[in-house]
Length: 241
Ligand code: PGA
Image (cartoon, rainbow, N blue to C red; front, side, top):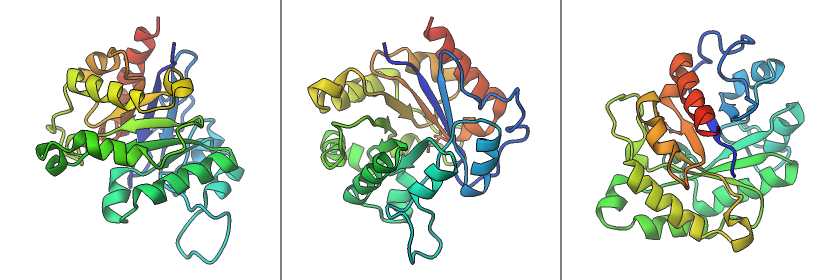
């Protein structure tokens, strides 16, 4: 059985109040892996507080003349364990291509970080019936024979500050998670965790997380609210029993 992984993507926000307290819900759990992706500014505080964490993006080269960038290997050296790769914000705002995302995944693996790589279709692509094609294109360059985690995040379901954004239905999400799993190499298919992201919150977490191919969540808005995040972790913990 795959262990649930609940990841918080704090995006460009300060750490939530009390996040670094020993009793905060951002600490990992015996029955559920919990990870957060803060800004670079809060990575060290997470590490010092023993919160499993990683950068939201990292440069593939270890060092060099790349003003404004931070490398994946520098994050690893500081104590990060994970790396988020190819979030739709990065694909949209920084024009990261699927090949560049794959290069980040490879660089993360090479320096010993566990990559969580985001894939998902936009509303335009969904309406044009292109979801399957888009997911296949995003997966094709990835080193799926390696130990990676995939986060299926339909871009149209990401809340971007609007709490009324609808998540994918559990049935639709399950269908696409099963499709994604079928595209993985046979010997990695059962072990690879596939997280769902896009307006997961306490109200819908149980239905989403109880789908057979949904192995956790990548949570934006609700991860900034410690109570809501704690409730989602509790749902995953109960489902693990
Ligand atoms: P959301 O964000 O939970 O606020 O929809 C998810 C994400 O962008 O990773």
